Length: 409
Ligand code: ADP
Ligand code: ASP
Ligand code: MG
Image 1: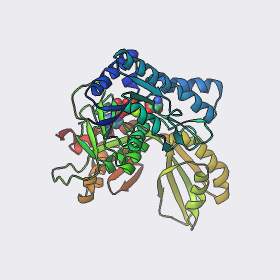
Image 2: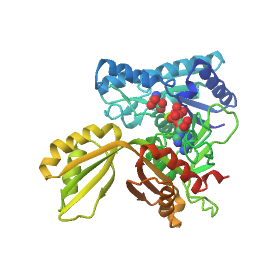
Image 3: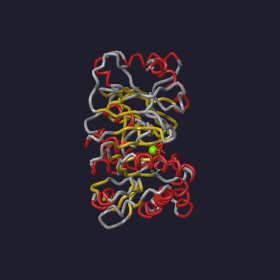
Image 4: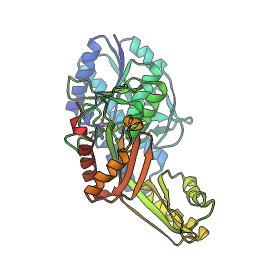
């Protein structure tokens, strides 16, 4: 007998038929004697629908009220799934995040989980119930409802698995595991049997939305056994996230390619090249709570230099305003220019540690396709480039082929 936390995403609970299908799967595990906590997302499209509704009423919806509203999508799913389980004669009980005291900070729309009260869930599990918990939501110290950021049900699943010490956290979704890249963009992408935690962390932070970044961080912190599987297929072992490099010499150097369209680039032109300038530019950006990703400062010429960086696309207008109004006049820069039609493409693999030449191969492959690289960033296990958005999919496809990712067994 094992104890599983199973998370089912939006597509997997996208209709009442699909919810019944999830109930059948859960009932099967339950009948085998396993203890099950199920975490569900809102039915697909529901969170977007609710956000759009809020924007019809308030241009920039108040974050607390927005969370109050968008948390309701998951509340519908948990009740429907519990009913579907009862129809199959399985004892089931649903809880919102607040009801099982998923305590978070008060950063509405992107709150962090601080603590979970395990009591109620444990009592129900021991009484033979399947416990169904709403993903994506919690409650802060003042009893206000919070949400955990888009894709946050993954984090609810992993956090519950960590708190309750489940044997495994199973993320059921509309693909049967983690692929070498998004199979919607590259049909030849291959499922990985395992991926190291570090690689998954990079993939998630570089744009692969198959797992929310925070869920991977959480899994690493508490060493949760985490697996991604299909909610539509009965067979298949999915992809297991591992915490050790397997030392396999045959292992591919590159494990995957991640990409993100959510990027924007800003360049401050003609900045006086003297100490403190990076701080003068990025300090006010950081003060406005805007995350900066890649940064490039050119070699100065005639005492002047150019300074470029990227931010999330949603922060582009705001960042441009800050630079033009607060920073440019202050530091005497010639101009501030930018664009939000860029994308980031990254190759990821722990094998890079022991293999040279990955970056140069990446640049050659892109050059052969005539794709201009606007920015470059590297870490020990990834190389990222910023390219024009319109070349993003082409870049992903040619790199996938060049690094033989379609040959992985
Ligand atoms: P859910 O609603 O179940 O949370 P998501 O849409 O959040 O599902 O995540 C699953 C999707 O992630 C897949 O349909 C796929 O298009 C996308 N995806 C992106 N990168 C990858 C990858 N490397 N491997 C598998 N799926 C990926
Ligand atoms: N329903 C939320 C979203 O669409 C959370 C999730 O699906 O994980 O982002
Ligand atoms: Mg998701």
